Image 1 (cartoon, helix red, strand yellow):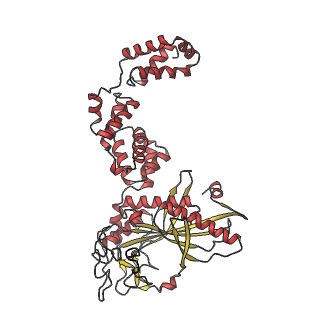
Image 2 (cartoon, rainbow, N blue to C red; image 1 turned 120 degrees about the vertical axis):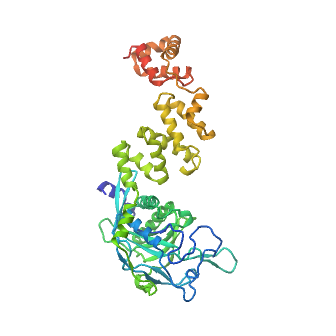
Image 3 (cartoon, rainbow, N blue to C red; image 1 turned 60 degrees about the horizontal axis):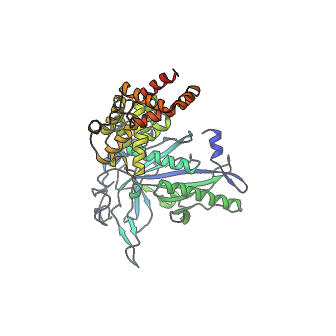
Length: 490
């Protein structure tokens, strides 16, 4: 991070500048059909307590059995984060009580996690690049959910999520602004989706973050941090950081001190509020789970998973810039979602990649955003959009006509080539017909002809008039070439 970006990330207080220090613990639900220690379904949206085994309900005598798929998914994620994989790891009991945690403890990992140190590279729109260190990734089971709105006096418990496998991805405190934090979570979600290890659907609770925030004078030691629990949207993460940083700055500038505590973010008010004093590791009385042997992996197991990794966002971005000549911005837009990049590569295959990128980003993404659709909902397939690009390259249609064809395919469907043929939308390349249109426009505007000869920039007016006279079908290239010749501007 350069000095300029460091300065821009500072917050002005009443008594001088402050720096925010942010670390995140992201809880990502593992993509798996079964839970971490039982065969119960992980499907979202079932009736309350319909996906609960005797293990999940902590019935006496029930023993956990590790799900190998979840282990493989954690290793796959670690490799995607350029992290070290620990061939030996241990599951521990983390003791605390909640009504939706039937065992009275959570099976997690403490001193010996499955994944060690890695990194995530975050590129911001400003051009700033931040390398965020990953401290660890460990597997743990999720708790159930307390329902407080089902009865006027009682709370109910839904254990469908109890025992669902989570990967807790812990970053180092390397982030210095809400923008960086938002970009980091977005990039992490993209990587997980590329890997197929978490669907990243924050609205369904399969990706959420505990946000650790502290403030300090630039260059000082780290301040006392507060943890904001279970923030389930990237926008809310940014809002929670902004509010919490300001809250802490005001307290310190007024002569107070920050209490280390756990807080909640209220999306309705945009504020954080105290939940409880922050627990330390010893408060949870961690100890190795006696029902689970240490997890021992072979290097061959890890190597097999490494061999199956897809091309990840950073590699795709670099390839698009180097091989296709795309701008860093266009490459970032295209690689942000796995489905988007697959669509683009289908359109670009065997075609001009820059032109394909322009059509995907400007026309397709623009229309999808306008109508609130995702790439999966696109009425235009990659083959159809590729067909439009082919027609432009062949000179069959102009860029302007192509936009009309795009609109027809969007609303009615069909093959672009057939639409152009049956609706008479082909570009006019007959120089005789174009020359005739130019002559008529010049004859009707002799004064503008003289002006254009003096100021060549005015020739653009004639191009517009000729295009209008030909219904937008004239080849712009042919119009420009003939106009220059007739106006003596060659």
